[in-house]
Amino acid sequence: MTTAQGPLRTAGDGERLALTHRPDACSGPAARPRAVPEPKGPHHLMSTLLLGHWTHSGNLVITSSHQVEDGDQNAIDALVNGQTSKSSWACDFDVDSHRNAVQRAYEEYVRDDDDADLIDEVQGFEPVTD
Image 1 (cartoon, one colour):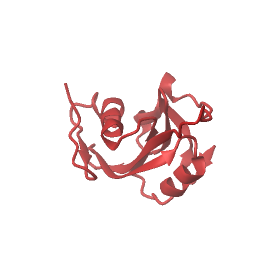
Image 2 (cartoon, one colour):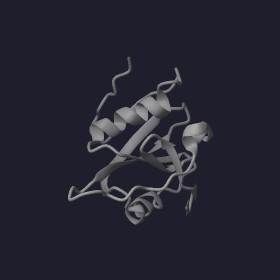
Image 3 (cartoon, rainbow, N blue to C red):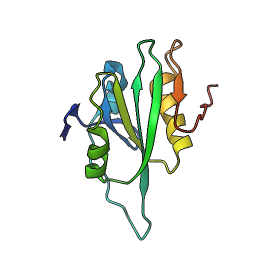
């Protein structure tokens, strides 16, 4: 599937990358596309979609967080398509809280870059860095 910003790709185990303009953020074996699983059973599955941007200094700034139905690509596209900057970033994580999604974003996109930080402007959560 392709959004206005480019192809929809998988970023890692269980989450769908909706948008990123940082070339190294969706490379490697974890970037292969996958089908979104259908919810199973009577439980209503939710994902957390984080939106933000990369700064010129290489920091990832989280500017909004949304709970979306797991697999609701229309809802994800509607939120992501509002981002038009080349530095825009968005990722959908299969976790039920903003805090867990921010931690995952740090681990998967920021941790390995010694000069980068993750800044959460939504709730001020500081990810565990050790």
